[in-house]
Amino acid sequence: MIGKRNYVQAVLAVVLVLVCSFVVGASAPITIYPALLELPVGAGVFVQVIELADRAGNMEQGDLVWVSEGPGVATVSPRGYITALAVGETRVEVYLTSNPSLRASCRIVVLEAGPILLYPTDNPPEPPLDPPAESPGDSDGDGGIRVEHDPELDTPVIHDPRIDEFFWTIRINDTISQKLEGDLPLKMVYKLDLEVVKEGGKTAKGVYTGTATLEFKLDTGEYEKQIMGMAEGILLKFMVHIGGTYQGSLDLNVEAYDMERFARFNLAPGEAPVVPLVKIYNMALGEMQLSGTGQAGASSLDASGVGIDLFKPPMSSNAPLGYRLALQDNGQVRMTLELGVADSFRGQITRKPFIPD
Image (cartoon, rainbow, N blue to C red; front, side):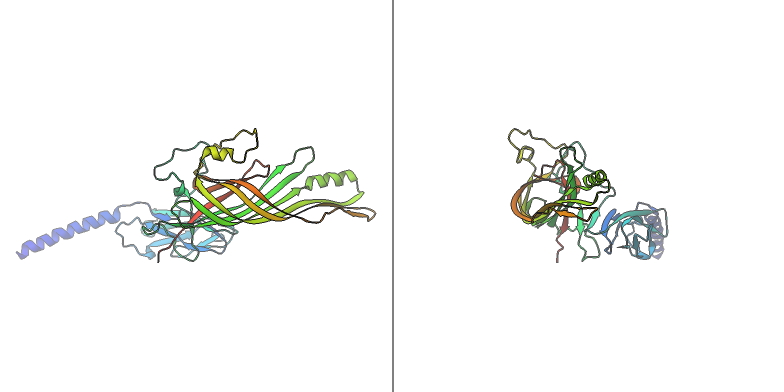
């Protein structure tokens, strides 16, 4: 009996060694999260290893080596903590000391300011020109919306079955311009700074509240150069200023995309609707009430020292401004305002998970 027992134990030992050798020797890529990380200067976050080449499940942190290709842009600690130091782009790599050929990398993009954004894959695609077929279970397009990391947490939240609701934020901070009709080299420049938030919900649909600031200015730089050139030294200074700033709060209702309503929203009588060529998942149509002041005037100074100032007192106004908001692939946002400008302001929507207690 003892001999049989020893024989069985020996056989099991051999099988165990073979199995362990197979498991340890089996190689698979290292997977880390996120694959692309955007963060502002001074921020920091852990990059997580979510799949190791050793599938035995007993890897130690000492078996991993983290390296930053550009430590002047972002550094990485021995445990994978990224610290953003300067605006720029770099990569952080991690590999196994036992097998350096098994490695993974995360692209790091450091910006001057903004939220921490996590991407599960590198190089998120731009919205296609042709509408893609909707994938089952993602008719809202929410699956492509980037996740905003909570800066109070060191480790990103990948997935937790208890998390099914999010804080949703739409941000736009963009500038567009349009040349004025006529022969004069003048163009109007508009800057929109908007942030609205929705607390809760599994999808992007719902009511967002926040604020918007719209600045406008007539760019007269080239026109002023022409005037000064034609004056041939008679004028020492010539300046034109037309601009203003308007602000207001708004409630923005994101709903399912309706192509007919979107294309015909606030059309002038006789104006033909234009259907967007890009895929739009959700939309918001409405008006924002903005109030503020604007000023217009000009001044000059000639060689004899005589100056002329034609500035008018600031004028206050309060008026509604219609808007169309489109939510596209990868959380990209486009907002068109009734400014007589064909271009749209660009922004993004992000979601931050509720962290369970």
